[in-house]
Image (tube, rainbow, N blue to C red; front, top):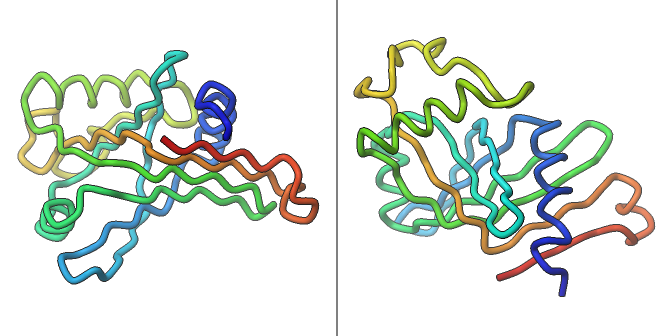
Length: 158
């Protein structure tokens, strides 16, 4: 099995190049729901963690209460794909929300952005703003060339 250190940098590079991903949650009855979100990933050589600024909507709150797991699927028209299957936890305390805000506001292009451009998000204390922390338990990186050859697909599982 691939070690996290052998795949994390490739995953972050592909995810940050693609920027937007489809994030799926599951409700209490096991039904999936997908939405497009914009994570930023940190790899420190040991741990891989993703961060998402998002609104704590009733649907997201209920889904993550029923099952605290998400699937983050990135895709390009050239068929490069990468996936992070993660445990997700809400960041709602003031210091944590400020840290997520700053991470995005000061993030590298193209994943960094000013969260204040979202209506209702004046700052990290805005009621409609929260963060999600993503802790992967499985990662897959599949460049387009690997789709036909089967070679070059990298998978890590906790």
